[in-house]
Length: 345
Image 1 (cartoon, rainbow, N blue to C red):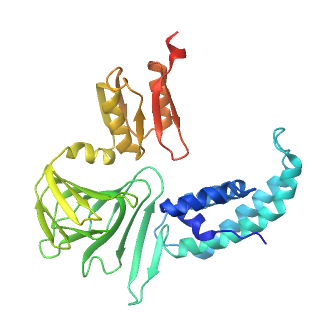
Image 2 (image 1 turned 120 degrees about the horizontal axis):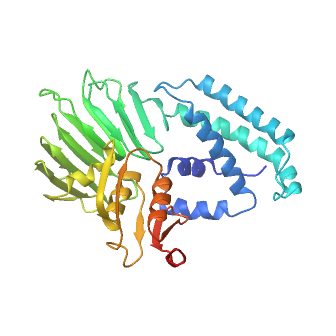
Image 3 (image 1 turned 30 degrees about the vertical axis):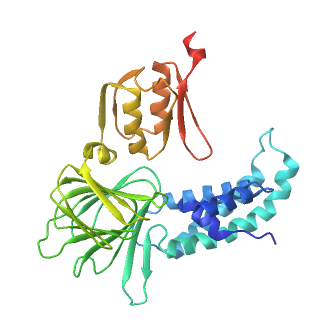
């Protein structure tokens, strides 16, 4: 039986792989039919996740849904006429093994759900339930039990105990979120992120705590917050941006562009005769993607449009029709914009 690195696959699905795991991933995905296997698992998993609309996970229902989808896929694979460009011998030899792998993947996916990697609860040693929410794509808005509003960015997890409202207001963050905290003088609201605690009573602020970044960035729009860590207790004022270095456990606070920091949480953003470089700065924040501009493009072209909930590629296609530029994504999902000489002629 072919060994499947489930821990590695789950980390990849969660986008939480370390540098070492990324190397292991590239080695594994390059072997044999592993890429096809992962595509099948990822597709099935995305379909099931898309049906989850509640915070409470019914693992029996998820299991039944996975089985139903597997059966439908197998039936479709038998009855559908294959596309001409596909190696038919390879497909026939792959399917029996693939079905076994997908069945095993489904079991892992149920465990994945039940362990609160997506939407679910986890029982701790002290029998306190932990509610966990993960946003896998785009951005989403949710309201916590104390009426605090939170906008959660792509690949971000927010967790809190079920005694959140009655005992404390502590959340754990991995990723990026914008908070509009309900005022409570007696019970401060606390965001914990990799050694840093952001303590507030009622305010609006953004926290960027990406797992693969060496820094945690806190941008304060309204009110006041205090930052607490080992040997650190600093206060912030509106319009300030704090940068906490995880490795050295040091924090710096300066005036910053808070509007840009929280722009991704807006329902819309309007650009009026704005240069490509500045627009890409906002697109990078809005879609949580790294963007590289070719030399000379920073201020060469200007655009006027309104950004709402359109997919990034739709925006890019429109931009490339207006001016002679082209775009591409690499294997790390880094977006590169360059001048297209062919469109000039």
